[in-house]
Image (cartoon, rainbow, N blue to C red; front, side, top):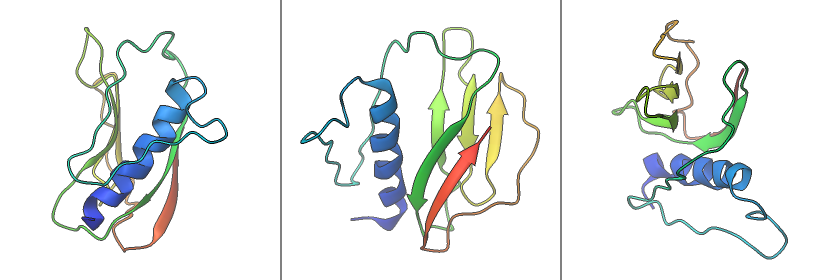
Length: 116
């Protein structure tokens, strides 16, 4: 499996578990092989508009691509909520970019990332 995509599969499993009822119930799992995998949930009802926390586990040693860990778009914007660039995590909220965090997760180890 491509190591750069290993984190993506993990993020998707965690995200899907939050968005689809009973997805992570006992004896149920989503299996992704890391080769072009992605999931789209449309629509997402009652997406938070004033406060949000997103967290995920990821593992990557890819230092050549910036990558997007989480992306939420609506009809109003392509970047309502975005966690971008796993070399220097950069949150985008309502198309506002406060700048990079200087937090990286591309050392080949597992990382628990939380953005509030």
